[in-house]
Image (cartoon, rainbow, N blue to C red; front, side):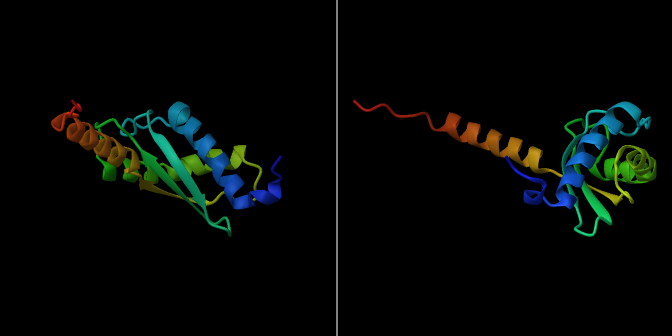
Length: 126
């Protein structure tokens, strides 16, 4: 079984922030610009615990990437205050949001592979 020494504190805090932010966005964040179906793909907390970079993605096209990141950034103080009540840490890191387009790139690559397979039917050996 892995001990806490195997996972540094900033990584454990990042995992906890990811879980809590997912709940906050889905249930408590009342901003019409931010769809509740946002995926928090990862959270990277600096070793000094001063900043947390939150990577988000959304497959809902009701808002542009820049607008989504901007809206989340505007609400960062609210989310940080809720995190402060839920996390057992002295100071909650500053929240910085970035859009993660990895999911979209993976879907596009999968589509291209499917197209390539469909355009080159497998030849049978006689």
